[in-house]
Image (cartoon, rainbow, N blue to C red):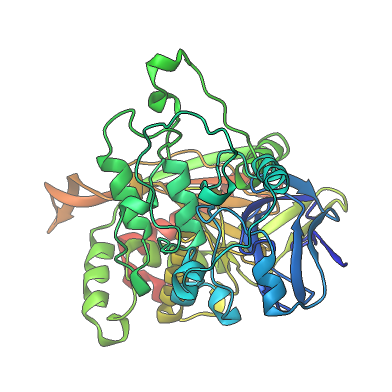
Length: 479
Protein backbone atom coordinates (compact mmCIF):
# COMPACT_ATOMS: atom_id res chain seq x y z
CA UNK A 1 0.00 0.00 0.00
CA UNK A 2 1.44 3.41 -0.92
CA UNK A 3 2.35 5.78 1.88
CA UNK A 4 2.01 9.48 1.19
CA UNK A 5 5.04 11.29 2.60
CA UNK A 6 4.91 14.91 3.70
CA UNK A 7 6.14 16.93 0.69
CA UNK A 8 8.02 20.23 0.58
CA UNK A 9 5.20 22.64 -0.33
CA UNK A 10 7.40 25.72 -0.03
CA UNK A 11 10.98 26.75 -0.65
CA UNK A 12 13.22 25.17 1.98
CA UNK A 13 10.41 23.65 4.04
CA UNK A 14 11.80 21.21 6.62
CA UNK A 15 8.73 20.45 8.76
CA UNK A 16 5.02 21.10 9.08
CA UNK A 17 2.17 20.52 11.52
CA UNK A 18 -0.87 18.45 10.61
CA UNK A 19 -3.64 20.86 11.59
CA UNK A 20 -6.68 18.82 10.59
CA UNK A 21 -7.50 15.68 8.67
CA UNK A 22 -10.09 15.98 5.90
CA UNK A 23 -10.49 12.19 5.57
CA UNK A 24 -10.86 9.22 7.89
CA UNK A 25 -9.99 5.56 7.77
CA UNK A 26 -12.30 3.79 5.34
CA UNK A 27 -12.89 6.74 2.98
CA UNK A 28 -12.34 6.12 -0.72
CA UNK A 29 -10.59 9.09 -2.29
CA UNK A 30 -9.48 10.17 -5.73
CA UNK A 31 -6.27 11.72 -6.98
CA UNK A 32 -5.93 15.39 -5.98
CA UNK A 33 -8.60 15.23 -3.30
CA UNK A 34 -7.62 17.22 -0.19
CA UNK A 35 -6.64 14.86 2.63
CA UNK A 36 -5.46 17.30 5.30
CA UNK A 37 -4.48 20.86 6.20
CA UNK A 38 -0.87 21.43 7.23
CA UNK A 39 0.67 24.51 8.80
CA UNK A 40 4.13 25.41 7.55
CA UNK A 41 6.38 28.21 8.75
CA UNK A 42 4.51 30.52 6.40
CA UNK A 43 0.88 29.51 6.05
CA UNK A 44 -1.80 26.82 6.22
CA UNK A 45 -1.77 24.69 3.07
CA UNK A 46 -4.31 22.16 1.79
CA UNK A 47 -2.56 18.91 0.88
CA UNK A 48 -3.96 16.92 -2.09
CA UNK A 49 -3.49 13.18 -2.44
CA UNK A 50 -1.27 11.82 -5.23
CA UNK A 51 -2.98 8.42 -4.91
CA UNK A 52 -6.48 7.06 -5.37
CA UNK A 53 -7.96 4.36 -3.21
CA UNK A 54 -9.12 3.57 0.29
CA UNK A 55 -7.61 5.31 3.30
CA UNK A 56 -6.26 2.49 5.47
CA UNK A 57 -4.35 4.47 8.09
CA UNK A 58 -3.71 8.01 9.29
CA UNK A 59 -0.11 7.86 10.45
CA UNK A 60 0.20 11.27 12.11
CA UNK A 61 -2.28 12.68 14.67
CA UNK A 62 -3.66 16.19 14.40
CA UNK A 63 -1.48 18.81 16.07
CA UNK A 64 1.79 16.91 15.59
CA UNK A 65 4.75 18.46 13.75
CA UNK A 66 6.71 16.10 11.51
CA UNK A 67 9.66 16.44 9.17
CA UNK A 68 9.40 16.53 5.39
CA UNK A 69 9.51 12.98 4.04
CA UNK A 70 7.64 11.46 6.97
CA UNK A 71 4.76 9.13 5.94
CA UNK A 72 1.50 10.74 7.03
CA UNK A 73 -1.22 8.61 5.44
CA UNK A 74 -1.52 5.12 3.94
CA UNK A 75 -3.79 4.65 0.93
CA UNK A 76 -4.68 1.24 -0.48
CA UNK A 77 -6.40 0.09 -3.66
CA UNK A 78 -10.00 1.00 -4.47
CA UNK A 79 -12.56 -0.98 -2.47
CA UNK A 80 -16.19 -1.79 -2.98
CA UNK A 81 -18.78 0.25 -1.15
CA UNK A 82 -19.76 -2.77 0.95
CA UNK A 83 -16.17 -3.17 2.15
CA UNK A 84 -15.96 0.50 3.09
CA UNK A 85 -19.14 0.21 5.14
CA UNK A 86 -17.49 -2.51 7.26
CA UNK A 87 -14.44 -0.41 8.08
CA UNK A 88 -14.28 1.02 11.63
CA UNK A 89 -15.08 4.70 11.39
CA UNK A 90 -13.76 7.55 13.50
CA UNK A 91 -15.79 9.02 16.30
CA UNK A 92 -18.69 10.98 14.74
CA UNK A 93 -17.81 13.90 17.02
CA UNK A 94 -14.24 14.11 15.67
CA UNK A 95 -13.28 17.53 14.35
CA UNK A 96 -12.57 16.83 10.72
CA UNK A 97 -15.29 14.50 9.40
CA UNK A 98 -16.17 16.29 6.13
CA UNK A 99 -17.60 15.72 2.70
CA UNK A 100 -15.07 14.87 0.03
CA UNK A 101 -17.59 13.93 -2.63
CA UNK A 102 -16.93 17.18 -4.44
CA UNK A 103 -13.18 17.70 -5.00
CA UNK A 104 -13.77 21.24 -6.25
CA UNK A 105 -15.32 22.18 -2.94
CA UNK A 106 -11.98 21.82 -1.15
CA UNK A 107 -10.64 25.06 -2.55
CA UNK A 108 -10.76 28.46 -0.90
CA UNK A 109 -13.58 30.98 -0.82
CA UNK A 110 -17.25 30.30 -0.41
CA UNK A 111 -17.03 26.90 -2.12
CA UNK A 112 -14.65 25.51 0.47
CA UNK A 113 -15.48 22.14 2.01
CA UNK A 114 -17.45 22.43 5.23
CA UNK A 115 -16.50 20.30 8.19
CA UNK A 116 -19.36 18.02 9.16
CA UNK A 117 -21.06 17.97 5.77
CA UNK A 118 -20.29 14.31 5.15
CA UNK A 119 -22.59 12.93 7.81
CA UNK A 120 -25.31 15.51 7.26
CA UNK A 121 -25.56 14.61 3.57
CA UNK A 122 -24.92 10.90 3.80
CA UNK A 123 -27.54 10.04 6.38
CA UNK A 124 -27.31 7.45 9.15
CA UNK A 125 -25.31 4.27 8.71
CA UNK A 126 -25.27 1.08 10.78
CA UNK A 127 -22.03 -0.35 12.10
CA UNK A 128 -21.35 -4.06 11.92
CA UNK A 129 -21.26 -5.83 15.28
CA UNK A 130 -17.72 -6.61 16.41
CA UNK A 131 -16.35 -8.79 19.13
CA UNK A 132 -15.93 -7.03 22.51
CA UNK A 133 -12.19 -7.62 22.49
CA UNK A 134 -11.76 -6.14 19.04
CA UNK A 135 -13.87 -3.11 19.94
CA UNK A 136 -11.89 -2.49 23.13
CA UNK A 137 -8.65 -2.59 21.17
CA UNK A 138 -10.10 -0.24 18.58
CA UNK A 139 -11.21 2.26 21.25
CA UNK A 140 -7.79 2.12 22.89
CA UNK A 141 -6.05 2.81 19.57
CA UNK A 142 -8.51 5.61 18.80
CA UNK A 143 -7.83 7.29 22.14
CA UNK A 144 -4.09 7.05 21.59
CA UNK A 145 -4.40 8.64 18.14
CA UNK A 146 -6.93 11.38 19.01
CA UNK A 147 -6.59 12.30 22.71
CA UNK A 148 -9.40 14.30 24.18
CA UNK A 149 -12.20 12.54 22.30
CA UNK A 150 -14.21 9.55 23.48
CA UNK A 151 -16.23 7.30 21.16
CA UNK A 152 -19.96 7.37 21.87
CA UNK A 153 -21.01 4.16 23.66
CA UNK A 154 -23.10 1.63 21.73
CA UNK A 155 -25.52 -0.64 23.61
CA UNK A 156 -24.52 -3.83 21.85
CA UNK A 157 -20.85 -3.28 22.67
CA UNK A 158 -21.19 -2.72 26.44
CA UNK A 159 -19.39 -5.29 28.62
CA UNK A 160 -21.43 -7.72 30.67
CA UNK A 161 -20.75 -5.79 33.87
CA UNK A 162 -21.37 -2.12 33.25
CA UNK A 163 -20.28 0.68 35.59
CA UNK A 164 -22.90 2.59 37.60
CA UNK A 165 -24.86 5.04 35.46
CA UNK A 166 -23.50 8.59 35.38
CA UNK A 167 -25.26 11.87 34.74
CA UNK A 168 -24.15 13.16 31.36
CA UNK A 169 -25.17 16.06 29.19
CA UNK A 170 -27.42 15.20 26.25
CA UNK A 171 -25.31 14.38 23.23
CA UNK A 172 -25.89 15.97 19.87
CA UNK A 173 -27.24 13.60 17.22
CA UNK A 174 -24.32 11.75 15.72
CA UNK A 175 -25.68 11.95 12.22
CA UNK A 176 -26.33 15.72 12.12
CA UNK A 177 -23.10 17.70 12.22
CA UNK A 178 -22.51 21.42 12.51
CA UNK A 179 -21.10 22.79 9.27
CA UNK A 180 -17.91 24.85 9.54
CA UNK A 181 -14.82 25.51 7.46
CA UNK A 182 -11.51 24.15 8.81
CA UNK A 183 -10.12 27.60 9.82
CA UNK A 184 -13.39 28.39 11.63
CA UNK A 185 -13.37 25.02 13.43
CA UNK A 186 -9.75 25.56 14.49
CA UNK A 187 -10.59 29.05 15.76
CA UNK A 188 -13.49 27.60 17.77
CA UNK A 189 -11.14 25.06 19.31
CA UNK A 190 -8.61 27.79 20.19
CA UNK A 191 -11.31 29.97 21.79
CA UNK A 192 -13.06 27.08 23.54
CA UNK A 193 -16.36 27.56 21.70
CA UNK A 194 -18.69 24.55 21.28
CA UNK A 195 -19.88 24.66 17.66
CA UNK A 196 -22.94 22.54 18.47
CA UNK A 197 -24.37 25.48 20.43
CA UNK A 198 -24.35 27.76 17.38
CA UNK A 199 -26.80 28.00 14.48
CA UNK A 200 -24.97 28.55 11.22
CA UNK A 201 -25.60 31.85 9.46
CA UNK A 202 -23.08 31.45 6.62
CA UNK A 203 -23.29 29.75 3.22
CA UNK A 204 -25.18 26.43 3.31
CA UNK A 205 -25.96 27.07 6.97
CA UNK A 206 -22.30 26.98 8.06
CA UNK A 207 -20.97 28.61 11.21
CA UNK A 208 -18.94 31.73 10.43
CA UNK A 209 -15.79 33.14 12.03
CA UNK A 210 -17.78 36.15 13.28
CA UNK A 211 -20.22 33.86 15.11
CA UNK A 212 -17.37 32.04 16.85
CA UNK A 213 -15.72 35.29 17.92
CA UNK A 214 -19.03 36.68 19.17
CA UNK A 215 -19.71 33.51 21.17
CA UNK A 216 -16.24 33.67 22.73
CA UNK A 217 -16.68 37.34 23.62
CA UNK A 218 -20.05 36.72 25.29
CA UNK A 219 -18.91 33.69 27.29
CA UNK A 220 -18.60 34.32 31.07
CA UNK A 221 -15.09 34.47 32.47
CA UNK A 222 -13.67 31.01 33.08
CA UNK A 223 -16.42 29.28 31.07
CA UNK A 224 -14.14 28.06 28.28
CA UNK A 225 -11.92 25.14 29.08
CA UNK A 226 -8.98 25.79 26.80
CA UNK A 227 -9.84 28.99 24.97
CA UNK A 228 -7.81 32.12 24.46
CA UNK A 229 -8.21 35.42 22.70
CA UNK A 230 -6.38 35.40 19.39
CA UNK A 231 -4.31 38.42 20.42
CA UNK A 232 -3.73 37.81 24.13
CA UNK A 233 -2.29 35.35 26.57
CA UNK A 234 -4.33 32.41 27.85
CA UNK A 235 -3.21 32.95 31.44
CA UNK A 236 -6.31 34.95 32.42
CA UNK A 237 -8.58 32.10 31.25
CA UNK A 238 -7.05 29.49 33.58
CA UNK A 239 -9.43 28.82 36.49
CA UNK A 240 -7.93 29.52 39.91
CA UNK A 241 -9.36 26.25 41.18
CA UNK A 242 -6.83 24.27 39.14
CA UNK A 243 -3.94 25.90 40.97
CA UNK A 244 -2.27 26.73 37.65
CA UNK A 245 -0.57 30.13 37.68
CA UNK A 246 1.15 29.76 34.31
CA UNK A 247 0.38 28.17 30.98
CA UNK A 248 2.70 27.36 28.10
CA UNK A 249 1.96 27.55 24.39
CA UNK A 250 4.28 25.85 21.86
CA UNK A 251 6.01 28.19 19.42
CA UNK A 252 5.55 26.76 15.96
CA UNK A 253 4.39 27.52 12.45
CA UNK A 254 4.11 31.18 11.53
CA UNK A 255 5.03 32.45 15.00
CA UNK A 256 8.21 30.39 15.04
CA UNK A 257 9.25 31.59 11.60
CA UNK A 258 8.38 35.20 12.43
CA UNK A 259 10.39 35.17 15.65
CA UNK A 260 13.49 33.72 14.01
CA UNK A 261 13.25 36.10 11.06
CA UNK A 262 13.00 39.13 13.34
CA UNK A 263 16.00 38.01 15.39
CA UNK A 264 18.06 37.41 12.24
CA UNK A 265 17.10 40.79 10.81
CA UNK A 266 17.58 42.80 14.01
CA UNK A 267 21.06 41.42 14.63
CA UNK A 268 22.22 41.36 11.00
CA UNK A 269 21.10 44.63 9.45
CA UNK A 270 21.97 47.89 11.26
CA UNK A 271 18.57 49.54 11.64
CA UNK A 272 18.00 53.28 11.48
CA UNK A 273 14.49 54.68 12.04
CA UNK A 274 13.30 58.14 11.02
CA UNK A 275 9.95 59.77 11.81
CA UNK A 276 7.79 62.42 10.22
CA UNK A 277 4.44 63.82 11.38
CA UNK A 278 2.25 65.30 8.68
CA UNK A 279 -1.13 66.77 7.79
CA UNK A 280 -3.08 64.08 5.93
CA UNK A 281 -6.30 66.08 5.56
CA UNK A 282 -6.09 66.22 1.76
CA UNK A 283 -5.49 62.47 1.64
CA UNK A 284 -8.68 61.91 3.64
CA UNK A 285 -10.55 64.19 1.24
CA UNK A 286 -9.17 62.21 -1.72
CA UNK A 287 -10.30 58.95 -0.13
CA UNK A 288 -13.85 60.28 0.20
CA UNK A 289 -13.89 61.42 -3.44
CA UNK A 290 -12.60 58.06 -4.65
CA UNK A 291 -15.28 56.19 -2.69
CA UNK A 292 -17.96 58.02 -4.67
CA UNK A 293 -16.18 57.57 -8.01
CA UNK A 294 -17.85 55.00 -10.26
CA UNK A 295 -14.60 53.08 -10.88
CA UNK A 296 -14.01 52.54 -7.14
CA UNK A 297 -17.53 51.83 -5.89
CA UNK A 298 -17.02 48.07 -5.68
CA UNK A 299 -13.53 48.09 -4.10
CA UNK A 300 -12.26 49.17 -0.71
CA UNK A 301 -10.65 52.61 -0.68
CA UNK A 302 -8.67 53.63 2.40
CA UNK A 303 -5.73 55.87 3.35
CA UNK A 304 -3.55 52.75 3.10
CA UNK A 305 -4.24 52.66 -0.64
CA UNK A 306 -3.00 56.24 -1.05
CA UNK A 307 0.05 55.50 1.10
CA UNK A 308 0.88 52.40 -0.94
CA UNK A 309 0.72 54.38 -4.17
CA UNK A 310 2.86 57.12 -2.64
CA UNK A 311 5.53 54.56 -1.68
CA UNK A 312 5.57 53.10 -5.18
CA UNK A 313 6.09 56.55 -6.68
CA UNK A 314 8.76 57.55 -4.15
CA UNK A 315 10.74 54.35 -4.80
CA UNK A 316 11.34 55.58 -8.37
CA UNK A 317 13.44 58.45 -7.00
CA UNK A 318 15.17 56.35 -4.33
CA UNK A 319 15.68 52.83 -5.75
CA UNK A 320 17.95 51.88 -2.83
CA UNK A 321 14.81 51.49 -0.73
CA UNK A 322 13.78 48.63 -3.04
CA UNK A 323 17.13 46.82 -2.96
CA UNK A 324 18.79 44.47 -0.49
CA UNK A 325 22.26 43.68 0.83
CA UNK A 326 23.49 40.24 -0.31
CA UNK A 327 25.94 39.38 2.44
CA UNK A 328 27.18 36.14 0.84
CA UNK A 329 27.97 37.75 -2.51
CA UNK A 330 28.93 41.12 -1.00
CA UNK A 331 26.64 42.87 -3.48
CA UNK A 332 23.70 45.24 -3.36
CA UNK A 333 20.84 43.79 -5.44
CA UNK A 334 18.58 46.39 -7.05
CA UNK A 335 15.11 45.15 -7.94
CA UNK A 336 13.43 46.65 -10.99
CA UNK A 337 10.01 45.64 -9.72
CA UNK A 338 8.17 46.21 -6.45
CA UNK A 339 6.54 43.33 -4.60
CA UNK A 340 4.70 45.39 -2.00
CA UNK A 341 4.28 43.59 1.33
CA UNK A 342 1.49 44.41 3.77
CA UNK A 343 1.95 43.14 7.32
CA UNK A 344 -1.25 41.51 8.57
CA UNK A 345 -2.08 40.32 12.09
CA UNK A 346 -3.96 37.01 12.01
CA UNK A 347 -4.95 34.45 14.68
CA UNK A 348 -1.92 32.41 13.57
CA UNK A 349 0.50 35.30 14.00
CA UNK A 350 1.95 38.06 11.86
CA UNK A 351 2.15 37.32 8.14
CA UNK A 352 3.47 39.56 5.37
CA UNK A 353 1.94 38.64 2.00
CA UNK A 354 2.92 40.85 -0.91
CA UNK A 355 1.34 42.22 -4.07
CA UNK A 356 3.46 41.08 -7.00
CA UNK A 357 4.58 43.83 -9.42
CA UNK A 358 2.56 46.45 -7.58
CA UNK A 359 4.49 49.23 -9.33
CA UNK A 360 2.93 48.23 -12.67
CA UNK A 361 -0.65 48.50 -11.39
CA UNK A 362 -3.16 51.28 -11.76
CA UNK A 363 -4.74 52.70 -8.61
CA UNK A 364 -7.88 50.64 -9.22
CA UNK A 365 -5.84 47.44 -9.73
CA UNK A 366 -3.83 48.17 -6.59
CA UNK A 367 -7.05 48.62 -4.59
CA UNK A 368 -8.34 45.25 -5.77
CA UNK A 369 -5.04 43.53 -5.02
CA UNK A 370 -4.85 44.96 -1.51
CA UNK A 371 -8.44 43.92 -0.83
CA UNK A 372 -7.82 40.36 -1.98
CA UNK A 373 -4.56 40.18 -0.03
CA UNK A 374 -6.06 41.23 3.29
CA UNK A 375 -9.18 39.09 2.88
CA UNK A 376 -7.09 36.00 2.15
CA UNK A 377 -4.85 36.69 5.15
CA UNK A 378 -7.84 37.02 7.50
CA UNK A 379 -9.18 33.66 6.31
CA UNK A 380 -5.80 32.01 6.88
CA UNK A 381 -5.53 31.07 3.21
CA UNK A 382 -2.31 32.92 2.36
CA UNK A 383 -0.02 30.57 0.42
CA UNK A 384 3.80 30.42 0.79
CA UNK A 385 4.30 31.87 -2.70
CA UNK A 386 2.29 34.95 -1.68
CA UNK A 387 4.75 35.67 1.16
CA UNK A 388 8.01 35.13 -0.70
CA UNK A 389 9.93 37.57 -2.86
CA UNK A 390 8.83 40.76 -1.12
CA UNK A 391 10.89 43.88 -1.77
CA UNK A 392 9.32 46.60 0.45
CA UNK A 393 6.82 46.40 3.31
CA UNK A 394 4.18 48.61 4.93
CA UNK A 395 2.93 47.84 8.43
CA UNK A 396 -0.28 49.61 9.38
CA UNK A 397 -0.32 49.95 13.17
CA UNK A 398 -2.84 52.77 12.89
CA UNK A 399 -5.70 50.26 12.78
CA UNK A 400 -4.95 49.58 16.47
CA UNK A 401 -4.98 53.28 17.37
CA UNK A 402 -1.17 53.42 17.66
CA UNK A 403 0.66 56.57 16.57
CA UNK A 404 3.80 54.87 15.20
CA UNK A 405 6.60 52.44 16.05
CA UNK A 406 10.09 51.25 15.12
CA UNK A 407 9.45 48.34 12.72
CA UNK A 408 12.02 45.63 12.03
CA UNK A 409 13.00 45.09 8.40
CA UNK A 410 11.90 41.82 6.80
CA UNK A 411 14.81 39.59 5.73
CA UNK A 412 15.68 40.10 2.07
CA UNK A 413 14.52 43.72 2.10
CA UNK A 414 16.08 47.05 2.99
CA UNK A 415 13.23 49.13 4.40
CA UNK A 416 9.83 48.98 6.09
CA UNK A 417 7.38 51.84 6.62
CA UNK A 418 5.17 52.07 9.70
CA UNK A 419 1.82 53.85 9.15
CA UNK A 420 0.33 55.34 12.32
CA UNK A 421 -3.24 56.26 13.15
CA UNK A 422 -4.88 59.30 11.56
CA UNK A 423 -6.47 61.48 14.23
CA UNK A 424 -7.88 65.00 14.47
CA UNK A 425 -5.36 67.31 16.15
CA UNK A 426 -4.63 71.02 16.37
CA UNK A 427 -2.37 72.03 13.47
CA UNK A 428 -0.77 75.32 12.46
CA UNK A 429 -1.65 76.39 8.91
CA UNK A 430 -0.65 79.48 7.00
CA UNK A 431 -3.34 81.25 4.97
CA UNK A 432 -2.86 84.67 3.36
CA UNK A 433 0.38 85.09 5.28
CA UNK A 434 -1.29 84.52 8.63
CA UNK A 435 -0.82 81.54 10.94
CA UNK A 436 -3.90 79.90 12.40
CA UNK A 437 -4.42 76.83 14.56
CA UNK A 438 -7.10 74.60 13.08
CA UNK A 439 -8.16 70.93 13.53
CA UNK A 440 -6.58 68.71 10.87
CA UNK A 441 -6.15 64.98 10.18
CA UNK A 442 -2.64 64.23 11.43
CA UNK A 443 -0.58 61.04 11.14
CA UNK A 444 2.98 59.84 11.75
CA UNK A 445 5.18 57.74 9.47
CA UNK A 446 8.25 55.85 10.69
CA UNK A 447 10.77 54.40 8.22
CA UNK A 448 13.33 51.77 9.27
CA UNK A 449 16.08 51.07 6.74
CA UNK A 450 19.31 49.08 6.42
CA UNK A 451 22.08 51.59 7.08
CA UNK A 452 24.72 49.45 5.39
CA UNK A 453 23.76 50.80 1.99
CA UNK A 454 20.84 53.16 2.58
CA UNK A 455 22.38 56.27 4.09
CA UNK A 456 20.55 59.02 5.93
CA UNK A 457 20.17 61.19 2.84
CA UNK A 458 18.44 58.46 0.82
CA UNK A 459 16.21 57.35 3.67
CA UNK A 460 15.22 60.93 4.48
CA UNK A 461 14.48 61.76 0.84
CA UNK A 462 12.21 58.72 0.44
CA UNK A 463 10.32 59.50 3.65
CA UNK A 464 9.95 63.18 2.68
CA UNK A 465 8.61 62.22 -0.75
CA UNK A 466 5.97 59.91 0.74
CA UNK A 467 4.96 62.58 3.26
CA UNK A 468 4.67 65.22 0.51
CA UNK A 469 2.24 63.04 -1.48
CA UNK A 470 0.07 62.37 1.60
CA UNK A 471 -0.01 66.09 2.39
CA UNK A 472 -0.87 66.99 -1.19
CA UNK A 473 -1.85 64.02 -3.42
CA UNK A 474 -1.67 66.31 -6.48
CA UNK A 475 2.11 66.44 -6.02
CA UNK A 476 2.21 62.81 -7.26
CA UNK A 477 2.07 64.29 -10.78
CA UNK A 478 5.66 65.48 -10.24
CA UNK A 479 7.04 61.95 -9.86
